[in-house]
Image 1 (cartoon, rainbow, N blue to C red):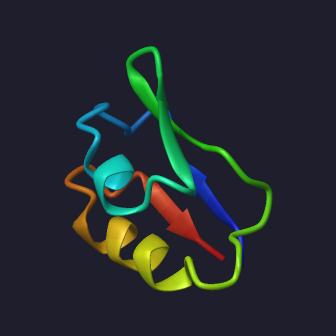
Image 2 (cartoon, rainbow, N blue to C red):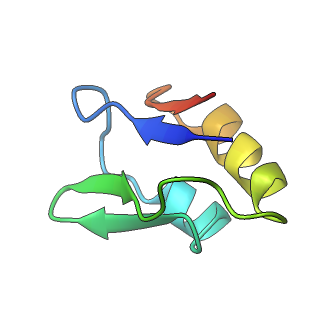
Length: 61
């Protein structure tokens, strides 16, 4: 599973970081993905972060 964040859409609210801190972090005013591939066991929190993102900036492949 791969996850990306569209910086054009990201508002930097930090909800994804609260939901899945092993995968997301805040850099400046935007959230970024800390890993190339989502680690086993983190898939569910990544999906939840994508669903909860108010800007729909998180894309999961």
